[in-house]
Image 1 (tube, helix red, strand yellow):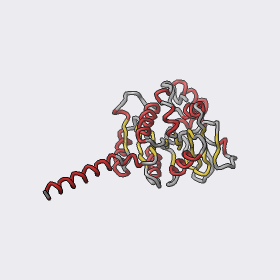
Image 2 (tube, rainbow, N blue to C red):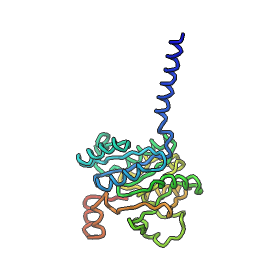
Image 3 (tube, helix red, strand yellow):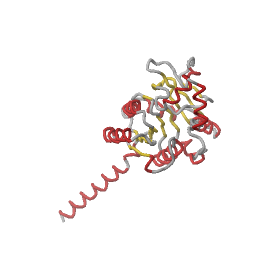
Image 4 (cartoon, rainbow, N blue to C red):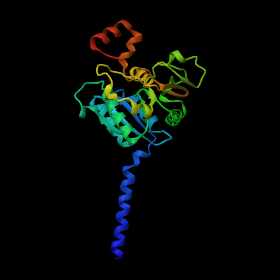
Length: 262
């Protein structure tokens, strides 16, 4: 009788422990993703900053056909920091960029977890409280579809892509301008209302399209100036620097190679 009771207690404990383990992801406050295409130095800086968050998050990195060396480094760091690494070459033959695929996988996962989706690009560094503050705004701002962090350089000066806001004095702006995906939260309400399977397949980047769709569906998009993140423009896509150094060559290559479709 004592043996059976002991076995029952152990079995009950084991079942509860497994349930707790399986439900751990539901304790997370947000799903954070970073699409990566090489740019190892800035990516590692992004990873370190994201994994220093003051709230529990689930972090997924999408490796979009990086080199074998970058893939090895990402694999090593996934063990060190505990993030999930999805190598897109294992699930698609489509060449980089695969942002549409990334967004569809991420939306499905965020909805399963019932948490907002936060996109942090691989040339951005966040602060410990960045995510908790973004979530706070999404929960209190009226009808929030998206909320983004303003981007700055290392000295705290607003930089690309928000230069047109450099003289803004408010801490939070309801904006009709598109929000960059440098560091932006998409609310669960918006994720439930718009399926990313409807994103146009011919485009490469979707921040403009999704920003417009959010407002079209009746949501509001906010830009937070009191939650700045450091942005190193185009570090993840160095060829885009041509846009400033040699605009003519940039647009010729963009046309010939069909790059940067927004």
